[in-house]
Length: 297
Figure 1 (cartoon, rainbow, N blue to C red):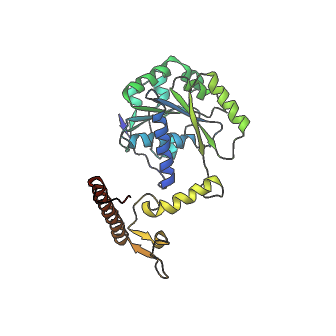
Figure 2: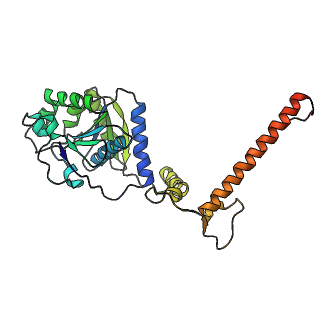
Figure 3: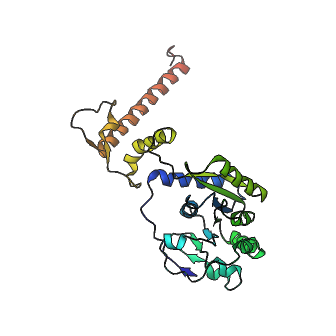
């Protein structure tokens, strides 16, 4: 088994990581039988391959043995995007019987994450993905891995995705925000319905979370209430900004940064005060039961 190193670009921010964790959790709640998942889109460049990779990584980070299958046999981008270097064998070699399935599986530097790259472009991609060999490949991977994520071509461009999706337990449609019309998306959905593929849901991709409106509101929410505690890329900060204490008795000119220890001591005092109130309430309740007082809480 070949070992490769995936080189990711800049780290995702907190909101992006949480979005993929939410997607992973929603898939897990869709049923224990959902193990093989096809990822497709309406047109190229909507980000389906990135979603497929990040979703596979999210499952792997959760301790699930996961494999990403690059079934975009016409125009794969994974090798170049993640700078893995030369990969000699791929899915095409396995489907035409030139190499065994075990030989085309690559182990990555991400724990629990494995990849099968597409390999050379064949003259008949649809026939390979619709053949018994591909069906058998997906079945074998399902038996060996907890989750199988299949990156397929855009369904609005070629039929390959529908052919591959019928061998999976479910399909996720990736749609770029403000780029695809409702009618076009509906036609792609209808095409998936014809293959009797279960549509798990839609990922709205490339959304500007900082713009005004619904998403902008939640973007500011995450930035204000989570950004200071997790840092720009998720690291915990060592201080709490002064604005956290406005309206709580800690305000004043020149108060720019409050040490985290002060914040912790204040929280401890609040908890201690709450415990004292509980003790007093218990004493009063005990007196009521013994008839020593007629007061009510």
